[in-house]
Image (cartoon, rainbow, N blue to C red; front, side, top):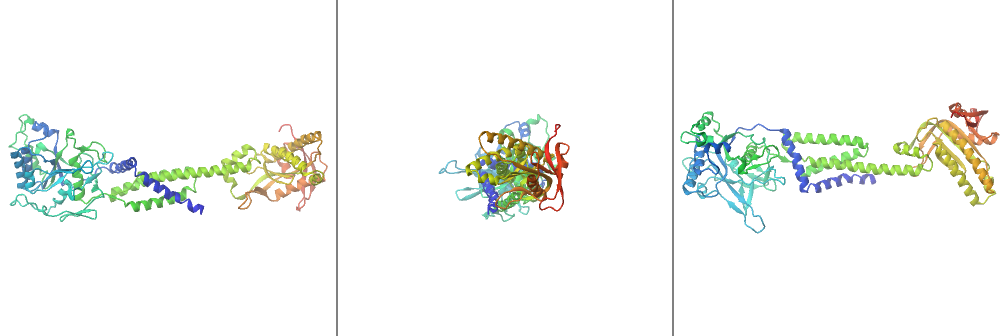
Length: 632
């Protein structure tokens, strides 16, 4: 059950990330991450169906005047663009205020005569609740021609970057369509101008219908939009990617004098005519000068893009049905949760450093996948949201791994600090895996010590005296064992069992066991003198040491941890301790032949006998341990 509950963590991380990305700062950061896809993908080829007429600095110089230009110039522009064979003219210029009746009528009449012009208006939404919105339509003479028009509202994201295109906004209950939608609706190649009926347009009477997240048209495939009435713009390149022609070049024909050319007539109109640069093109007319403040940042970065080119990008995308799509948020959430569950399972089972490498590789892979789907399928995936979820998952696994490690270390320290030297405990903490359940076969030395005739002692002393003297004795002996890097295995009444060379390797563990035995004898002698001075009875002890292979490890039950050793080596060590009762030795310490071979260069020992101990059929040579040689 506990293991099952741990898989709720990925779900909790998913919910946390979803909540975090409701915050404006993180939403903007996600947009920035997705913007990088545009820059990595780079500019794309255009369909060669759109040209921009730029009201630029060159036009100001050629005309020797500042914006706004006289509307007679715009009327001439319409006539000349018609002569150049332009299929559709789109003004990203709002003629919403009257100039003078003559020029207004001239502009309207020339546009109405050719029937191929689309004008612009604006919808000013109310700043405060309860206030009315304002619709700025083209001037009355233009409206009277019946020519189509669309609003030029552009709405940036929180960081002022234009990522979406407004398809429509509601004026009361009436949808007001954007310039791009109106142009798209009125730009079908099969739509023909009826020049005998000025003001008519083949698409003029066709109705646009908003239904099920699409704007449906009689002449084109439907246009998708989001809940806010906007659509992601699949930009084709940075500012200046579309072909530009200067405004002044179009109106510079033989009947137009250009003061900015200082008396040199260039008549650039005829060059455009000869080259057929505008024939059958959709022509967008708009400002590109910085001082007119009609430029905006886009995901591609670099120089800000003129508003007219943003309209061009959307129109290109719509004509090619090259729309960007966001992955369904429910599908994405399900995929992300599956990914988190998979890697949660993995992170729990591998070391944090390996998990960190996998995390980095995974973030790179998910970005590469996002780039591939963006470039080939026009599918836009969350990038930062996915990366943050994976990072949080890793951090959580790291924290839980640390807590688990600390818990294991506390358990090890609590379990072994009473039985091992502090430096051995610290070594064990560095590699707690050595304490995993089960045993391994390894060479060790084992020491057994036992009090002589302790049963008789207990019978002649009251329990309090017995317990106190045993406590004092065992405490002193354990201190000697720990000081010599031994591990106290267990107490069996008054018997002590200590291991050397486990759970951590110990160089010449047999010698450490022998040193322990001799120091235990010295400590007992000190205690005997102390007890005698206190008027207490004392006792003797015997010590047996053996060296060899044994199964060592956590050999307890599932309920109780028990780090110990088992095997013939251990049994022989215990028998050697009992054998000390049968020989008159100076220090009551007997070691086996196996131990002697390991320490004979370092200790003084005397051969005692070759005996068969209880439970063994083979004779074993035994030695009396006397002392440590001076050079050791």
